[in-house]
Length: 177
Ligand SMILES: [Cu+2]
Image (cartoon, rainbow, N blue to C red):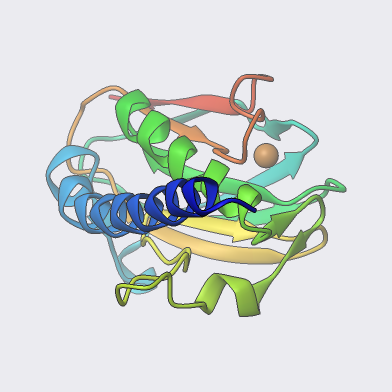
């Protein structure tokens, strides 16, 4: 590897790390204002089972009342790693850039999540941990709960931001009444 190539790579990596930190930070704050907020299971009025396949969700449309707290039980029935993420289309687009990086760095490999790689310090105290409260990321066969209060009536989608999945149609609408 030439010195120039190395420096470009190193610069790209630190840029990646910065983008990651900024993204994770932005999510935490943006979500509360935009799409709602995490809530306690005891506040949930309803449980919605969400099944993830390669590459689509069942159901594809979820109807909620404004202000309602929904307990989602998400299960990955596919052969690939999938995400269930509640956000606006803009938020999903931003998160897709982060997830591309996770694939580039080997954090997500087809049907596996590399947790050691995920926890690795990217050089400035940030890591590629996937711990936003509006999202779950699951290996095949895994299941996890996500409890969310839909406090706003913005245009919300649930989506999988693993590279290529959203483009393949792995998203659905949250219709707020
Ligand atoms: Cu997916």
